[in-house]
Image 1 (cartoon, rainbow, N blue to C red):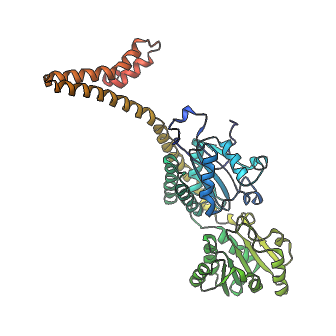
Image 2 (cartoon, rainbow, N blue to C red; image 1 turned 60 degrees about the vertical axis):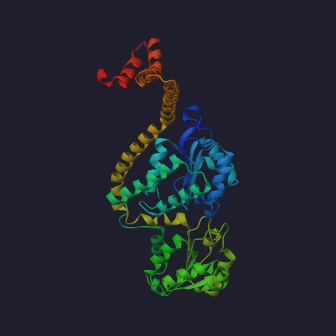
Length: 443
C-alpha cells in the first residue's frame, strides 16, 4: 500500500462485518479518510467530484459493493468532498472516487489528502468544530455531517465504529462551541455576499434581489439581505410551492424557474444556489438581461457546486460575478476573536482524540474477550452435563459438586499452567499470569 500524504481531511472506522475478522488479520487500514477541500483543490475540480444529495445512498452502496470497505460515509459540500471508510484500502477508495466521477486518477491525486487512525479522528473533530472550514467556526458543516451520517445509515453502510466517530464528533463540536468563542462575530458566505453587494450598490434599500433556489444557503442569504431592507425580494425555484413558502416568510414574491429568462432584467442582485448538475443561467441569458437594463450593473453571486452561472458571465461588462472562492477573502473580517479561541478549541479536541483512541484500543480486544468467554462457557457446559448425569445416577450431591468445581478449575487453569511448564526465559509470562491470577502476590 502506498504511504499516506497528510493534509486536512476526512474519517472512518470499522470492524469487518462480513468476514468477522479482526483488523490485524487483514492488510487494511482500520480507519481512514480521504478527500479534497477548498485548501487543496480549485473550485473547477471540486465541482466535478461533488455528490448530489439524492445520489448519496446509491453511491455508498456502489462503494461497499465494488471495494472491500466495511463501512462508508460521504460528506459532500460546496467546499469539500470527503470519503470516510473503515477496514479498507484508501488507495482502492481513491480509485473508486475517480472512476465514479469519470476522472483520471492522476488528475485528482495531487489534490487529495488522506488521514488514518489518530489523524483521521482528529480531523473529524476539527471539521465538526468548524476549524477546517473556509469560514473559521461556521456551524453549517455540523449539519452537513449529520446529513452524511443519516445517508450512510439509510444506505446500510453505517456500522458501530463509524457511527461512534460521528456521534463523538458532534459532541466535541458542542463542547467547543460551549466553552470557547469560536462562534463569536458570526461571519458566513451569506454575510460576505451582502458585504460585496454593498460595495457595488451602497444603497441596498433601493435594489431588487432575486434568489434562485430554496436551500439552506439561500435561506441564510435571504435573512442577511432582508436585514438591509431591499426594495423587493423574489424567489425562483423549479418547485413553486417551496419558493412560495420562502417568499411569504420574507415578504417577497415567488416564481417558477421557467420564468427566470423573462424576469431576470428586473433585478439588480442575483444570488443562486441550486442542486442543478448543469448551469441554469447562461451567458446568453445574462446578455439579454443587460441589454434590457440598458447596461445598468448587475451583481451576481453563485454559491452552487457545480456552478449555477456559466463562468463566462464574469467576463461581461456591467456584470459583477462572484463564485465561492471569490468570497474567501471577504470572510476574514471579524475573525480575530475566533482565531484567539483556536488554541483553546484545539486543546479540547486533543483531549477528546485521546479518549476516542482509548475506546478504539479497547474495542480491538473484543474478539479476544469473546473467545475467552466462549472457551469458559464450553468448559462449564461439559462439566455441567457430567454433573447432571451423576446426579441422575443417584450420586451424593456434595460429591458431585466437589467434582464439578475441581473439573472447572482444572480446565480453566490448564492453558496458563501448560504455558508456564513450556518455559519463560525472560519471566514476562510468569509476571503476566501472576498479575491475572494472583494480583495480591504480584503486587
